[in-house]
Amino acid sequence: MIRKFYKNRFEIFFFSMLTILFGSLIIPVELFEKVFVPVLFIINIAAGILLISKKKKLVWFFLIILLISASFVFGADMINREVNNNSSTLLIRMGIYFLFYSTVTIEIIKQVWHAKFVNKNVIIGLMSGYISLGLIAFLIFTSIDISTPGSFEGV
Image 1 (cartoon, helix red, strand yellow):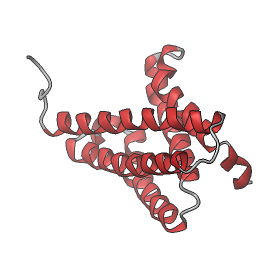
Image 2 (cartoon, helix red, strand yellow):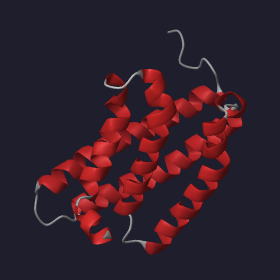
Image 3 (cartoon, helix red, strand yellow):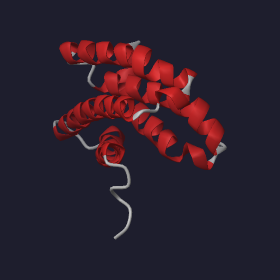
Image 4 (cartoon, helix red, strand yellow):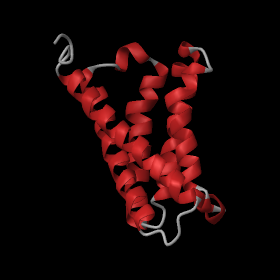
């Protein structure tokens, strides 16, 4: 079953990223952020794990990080957003996302680089890599803003 999904790994990752980025244009923002974003991030993380599935040690490492973060950081956030939105929890979450998406982006670049033929999968893989690079930059800037509030205000 994983082989079947592995053939479409770039498409799954790409479309889950697009849904996270542009889903609020279709679905009302509050409903999207409270209900759909956590589910879409889980799908996106699962697609990222599928991308690195050929490296077994790396997959186990990220599965353990995913389980720990899901139970402590993300689980409490889904139950009560107001209590758990302190800066240390947000920085931990951003760090986990940064580590994961950096690894997945590097793996996407490697897989696209070593492709023997340019086809639809390679092109979608390239677009996924570019979107992932943008997401990594977003995570860096968000972490800076969380640690130093108002750092991007003014001229």
